[in-house]
Amino acid sequence: MVLIRFVSLLLIIFGSYFGSCWWSGQAIAGVLADRVAQFPQWQEKPILEAAKADLLYPGWMTGTWQVTSTLVDLIAPLAPQVETPGFAGNQKYLHRPVNFQVRFRGKSGAWGLPMGNLTSAQVVADRAFNGLQINRAYLGDRALSVKVKSRNPNDQVTQIRTPGGRQQQLVSLITQRGSETPNPDRFIASEVAQQIFRGKIPPYINQVETTTLYEHQGKQIIGDQITAVYLVPQDRNYWQAGDRPVALYRYKLRLKPVTSSQ
Image (cartoon, rainbow, N blue to C red):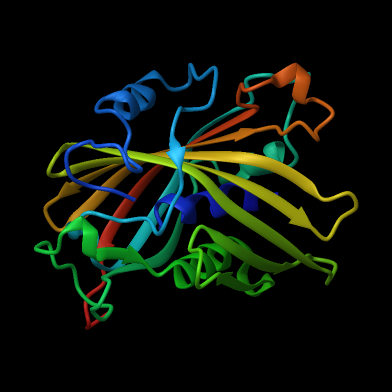
């Protein structure tokens, strides 16, 4: 069930943040940086504000990017008593680079090359494009579509086809987010989303946190991304796990600009 991971990736890499840390979707300065530094000693979910409107990015993320994402660590903190579906299968992605494209733009501008002079208040992600690109990098033509609700960019639906030909649907609703900017070239964001996998009875429900540190280095961006999976009260193992993560994944990201000649 690798979708647990790459939908989480599109939530953050693709689709929050900038400026000095102020409330209204941004975390208190230093909290998220400390969280990244404390990995894997995570014992609970982060304290974030309710997600509203769209996610905003720093100006230096504007443009179309070729992403290389590499899983460098995966941990099941409560195994063997509690382990999420798909955790064992995801081990095949360890140290295996996965490539896809993503794009960001100024709200009123066209997709194009990076433009570092844009402010964060102007930059948003092409969520549907990014989500589909990530899905296809993992599933090929079994990734059918990604749709984002026009009136609520935090609500999106992914359609996939199983190896047996059945269609499954993943409904993802971002419920919380926060961000902080340690300096103009470093940006940290965290989001929590509820995910519902439909196509099996009963549907599988969980929560996913994605916390990412981005660093602008010349013409490229380097990322340190951590995805944590949490159980919900509907899960029979919830009372054993509580708010502790049941799966942790760490990725190294490299984003290089796509030029018009590529």
